[in-house]
Image 1 (cartoon, rainbow, N blue to C red):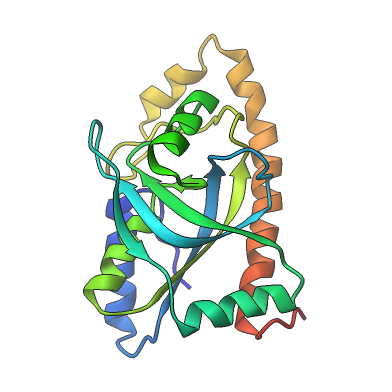
Image 2 (cartoon, helix red, strand yellow):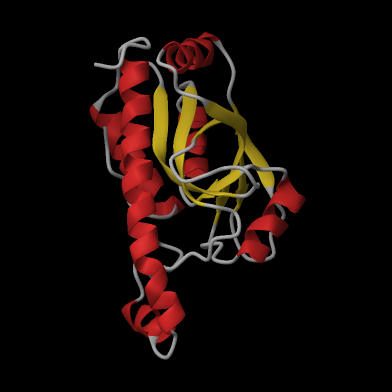
Length: 207
């Protein structure tokens, strides 16, 4: 398991290093948290991607970069089901920037059909395809579609922008009050993804 950080650039670098160190890898499982793009998904809900869509830069059109199918996908789905873990299946969108408002997230849903959004999965999909490795993507929902997303401002390389982040909180107490909610949701999502990975690692048996 590797921690790839935020954003496509950092993620692809980390995946490349990991796969160079593990040349006999059979397939990749991309995990982490994601934002809901559709109503009904709650913090801690599991999303099992059937395809990956990416928007690489401002103004660019969304493009599919990977589709998930095959025996390994069937086995992982069966493991989640055997463990009693419910999941939503659909496209995951990788965005070049954080979608902070409900309006932004709903617009992304309308334009791409994706049910959840992150900032990393497309990089994993691209590298997996380049190496001919099957990919599965299992993520846990962090924020609902209409939740405002509070957090650090991030540049295209996944680096936190300290001044921009500080400025985003100045004179905006409502934004600061969102932090405890996000931390609670992160705890819920982290526990959910840990349970899902345990289930697939042990063929549906949660120990």
